[in-house]
Image (cartoon, rainbow, N blue to C red; front, side, top):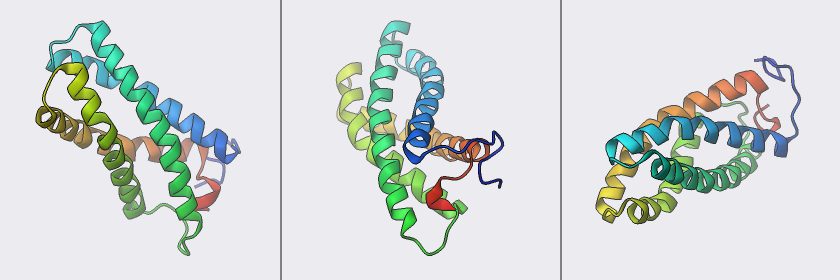
Length: 149
C-alpha cells in the first residue's frame, strides 16, 4: 500500500484519528437510525437522537481507543495491520463500547438491561463487520498510520 494511501495525503496522527472517527460515525448514524426506528417502532426524531447520543459516546471512545491501540502497536516488532490485528482492533473497540452503550439504550428505549444487551449484540455483529471494512477502506484511502509502517 502506498505510504499515504490513494488520496496521497500525509496526515498527522491526531488529525488522522479525528478524521477517521468523524467519518466512521457519520456513516454509522446514517445506517443505525433507520434500524432503530424500524426495530423499536421509534419515531425518526427519537431514533436519530439515540443514534447521535450513541455516536457521540462512540466518537469519544473511538479517539481514546485508537490512541491506546496505536501506542500498543508502535511497541510491536511486527509492523503492518494483518487480518488478525484488525480483528483484535475491532473486538477491543466494540467490546469496550458495549460497556457504555448498553445502559444508554436501556434508558432511552425503556427496555431492560437484558434486552439492551441483546440489542447491543445485534449491533456488535453488524459493527464488527463495519469496523473492519471501514478501517480497511480508510487505510487504503489515507494510508496506514505511522504506528503500522
